[in-house]
Structure formats: structure tokens, C-alpha cells
Amino acid sequence: MKEMQRDRMLGNESIGKLLARMSVPAALAMLVMALYNVVDTIFIGRGVGTDAIGGLTIAFPFQIIVMAFAGMIGFGTASVVSRSLGAGNRERAYTAAGNAFTISVGFGLLVTVVGYALLDPILRLFGATPVLLGYAREYLSVILMGSVFITFSMATNNIVRAEGRATVAMVTMVLGAVANIILDPIFIFGFNLGIRGAALATVISQFLSFAFLLFFFLSGKSSLKIRLPHLKPVGSVLKEVFALGVPTFIRQSGMSLVLILVNNLLGHYGGDIYISVFGVIFRILHFVLMPLMGLVQGFQPIIGYNYGAGNIDRVKHTLRLTILVSMTVAALGFLILSLIPGPIFRIFSKDLDLITTGMPVLRVVVLIVPFIGIQMIGASYFQAIGKARPAFFLGLSRQFIFLLPMMIVLPLLFGLWGVFVAFPAADFFSTLMTGLWLWKDVRSLSALSPNRPRGKGREEAEKKAVPILGQ
Image 1 (cartoon, rainbow, N blue to C red):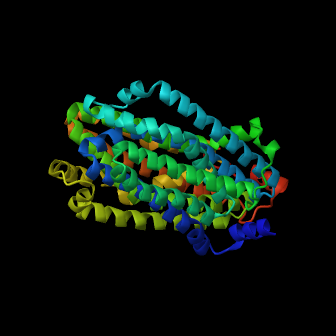
Image 2: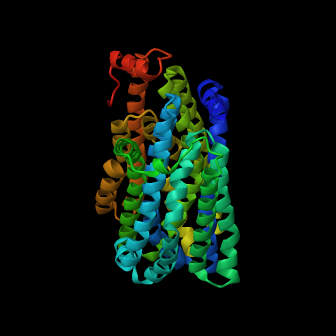
Image 3: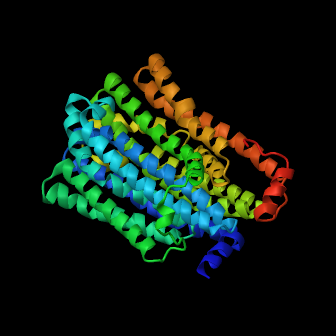
């Protein structure tokens, strides 16, 4: 009965109310998650020093790679689960979720082993200078202990949201984030553990989120009735999960490559202080953009379910409303960051060198932020409706097609500032490309009837319809 009620909610409730119900808990949870990264940096900056922020920045690409794989499994599985539920194929939804459990835990264990074996070479590759290497090593050597917890939590949290349990997903993230915020000052200042204490607080918080999600599934409260046979990898399911999740992996791991390149370029053109500046800016932007990530996570199951059920009008309505909300939220964040960069930097450190160096950099990096939601929503839209190829290409666009090449070329022309100008330039071109692709695809959706039949009948109707761009 509960499963049917959730299905009816995704298929019939007012789009505005449904988007708020699905997105607000996710956005709040993402904000709290981002807040604990910000608080981490504040405590480290004020309790250890500016160079410690640089060490944290060096270690962060490794964490992003781990989160990128978990995101790939989570978003890919969420798409399969939501569309399977929309089409009435519950067994396939159970299998996809069970396979996600197995793959996320296996990858977490692999990361731990490889990370400890290659710790120093990895950090040097990521741009560690002699001054920053010790801080980065201290932090990452502890973080590696929690790899299984973070991969499982991130992957399965998306699955929980795909079955319509946005509040449970929010509680999972808030639980870990609040624990981290509470434990940070205890370990950093109370036990005088410095940057190692911040890492220990993060691992414990990740474990709490992991334990909460595991209890949720084992207690039977989830509508996905996962049993031992569902844990056995199924080739066809995993193929679809990876195909749909790869764009997420590309976007997030692409950011890891960007950070690695930025760290090395800043170390060459600007020195340790610019690595620390960028570390602060990255966390500020991460915090500001988290509501957009929550919006994306909330709209994805709505899009996936209604596309699977054939409710094309609801798909288009959801997409239009989500883009409008994203631009409003992003514009507000842009105004705050542009108007008061000084006070923002003073939250992180009293170091005048860090503050005066960082203010003009922040103003440049955020120039195109008001429109960045279009790019984020576009790639996730194609994921949600099961179109792997356009989702893959758009996932490539910002980091790989535009940002990385610009970061290589522009510093040769403009030196240090070429590194920072590359960010708004890449945002502009990737947003333009995504907007055009979305416009063409939405126009092609009109070739489909407003309410297509389900199951085999739906597939036959799609075959007769005008082919959709990217398929």
C-alpha cells in the first residue's frame, strides 16, 4: 500500500508541491553537508593555520574521486529504480539496489588498500609542495579508514531518494554532518589532534550515516525489499547503471582532475598561499551550489518516474520549473559572494595575506554562477530519462571539453590569472551548449503523446514516435 501511495505521489501530485517535497529536504541536507566541509576548513584555518588549509586542498581530489564513483553508482541506480517503479517492474528495482550495495562496498575496500599503498606518490601527483605534503598526509591517512562508509552512504542515499523517501535521505546526511561539526572542535582543540582530528571527526560521522542507512534497509522500512539474491551482480542491470551513472562520475572526477591541475598550476605560478586561497573558494562555492544539487536530486526521481510512466507533460513542467528555481537560487548566491568577499574570507582565517589575495579571485571565479544550474540540471535530466549518450557528453562538457583545455592554454597567455579566468569561461560555454541541447530535446518530446501507455505498449509507442535527439 505504501509503495502504491508513493507511486501515485510521483505521478499525480502538483509538480510545484512535489518538487518542494523532494528537493527541499535534499537541499537542506546538502547545505548541512557542505557546511561541515566549510566548518572543517574554518577550524583547521583558525586552529592549525593557512598552510593546513593548503594541505586539505591537496588531499581533496582523492576524496572527490571516491565520491565520484559512489555518485556514479548512486545516480545510475536511482535512474533505474525510479523508472522501474514507474513502469511497475519492482523486481528490477530491487536487483539494481542490491547490486549497488555490493559494488559500493567492494570499491570502498579497494580504495583503502590502494590509498595506503600509494599515499605519498598520490599526494605529490596532486600538487603537494614540501610545505603542504605533511599536512595532506596526516589528513588523508585517516580519511582512508572511512572509504567504505562514504561509498556505501552516498550510493544508497540516492536510492532512498529514488523511492520517494527524501526525508530519510535528508536525515542520513544531516546526521553525519552534525556529528562532524560537533566532533571537529573536540578533536582539533580538545584533544589537540590538529588536522588529524578533523579527519577523525569526518570518519566517525561517515560511519554514523552508514549505520543509519544500513538499519533503514535491514529493518524493512524501505519499499525496496532487498534480499540476498539481489546482491549478486547482474550484468544487464550493472551495464545500465554504469551507462547512466558515468556522466555523474565524469562531472565529479573531472572536478578532481581540475583540482589536481589547479594545485600544480598555482604552486608554479603563485605559491602555497594561492593553493590555500583556492581551497577556501572551492568550499565557499561548494556551499553556495549545494541547494542546486539538492534541487537536482529532488527533480530526478520525478522526471524518471513520469518519463517511465509516459506522463510527458509532467516531465516538461518539472524541467521548466526546476530551471527557473535554479537560476533564482544561483543569482542570490552570486550577489552575496560578489558583494561581501572580505567578510566571507575572514570567517576562515585572520591571515590578512589570505584575505587580500582571495577577494579579487573570488569575484572572478563566480562570474557565471547565476546560470550554472542549467548545466547541472541538463545532464541530470538526460540521466533521469535514461538517455546515456547526451548525459555522457554533457557530463564531459564543463570539465573536460572546456575547463581543462582552458586551464592549460590561458595561463600560458595570462599567467596566474589565466587559471582563474578559465572557470567562468568554461561555465559560459558549457551552459550555452546544455541549454541548446535541452531546448531541442524538449521540442522533440512533443512528438510523443501526453500520456503514453505503460510497459510493452509504451515501448511500441516510442518506436513509432519521432526519434529523440541523442538516442
